[in-house]
Length: 143
Image (cartoon, rainbow, N blue to C red; front, side):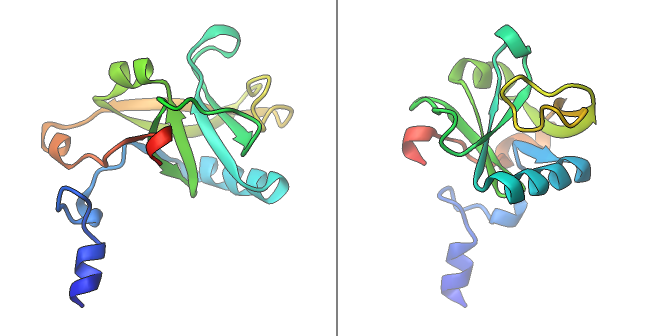
């Protein structure tokens, strides 16, 4: 029993069940992620930083996108890791990202493209009492 208790705590000694996730997904997003994983195998998400596709969550087959060594892993949704650049994380670090699916066109290189739906990032500010219970982040190089 003691080993189970130790395993359920993070490096800071917090109970893993009490950690607040930095990224979550709606049921619609989780269903689309499951469909894409069944078709393409292992996946990853990267929050696009602008340019051609605006700032949107991009879903890739693992190996089709090179995550930078300094990119920040916020967590996972539907078992799929979710990354963003360090500069974006600095801007968004006080918000929880909620990945949703809405009608529209997916990003040019994102796997949902061509399905008449796209992933969308919604966000909310963390409450004061959540800030000390945030799920820790790692860089891609540390993961």
